[in-house]
Length: 125
Image 1: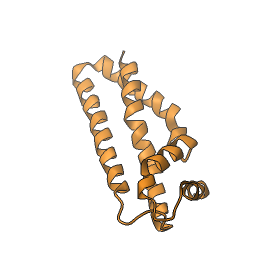
Image 2: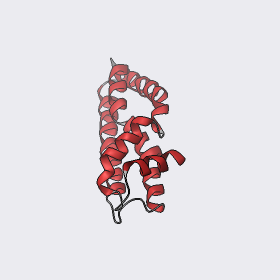
Image 3: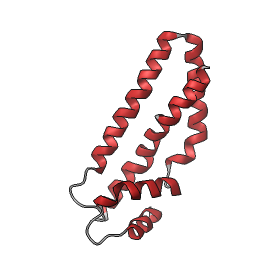
């Protein structure tokens, strides 16, 4: 039971944290340097808010299960490790992350910058 809880919580929290840390933040920084985004834009602020929320949820579950049951907590840790190992390839510039990033942040593209230009810039990173 603990492993299933760990897998579920980790899927929705730690994987999202990894995507933000290893794709969202670096991509936004590089697009800012390439002047493809409006200035100022709230993308990095949104990334930081996401990190705080997802981290809080994971830490809350971690602490709750740690105090509730040692057996469930051990399973939770095993489930966490399994999902992180299975989800490592989701952290980079894969097609899902690129399309989600472009769709979510298109309103912050600089004037005259279209989706294709941003996608090609991300592909060169």
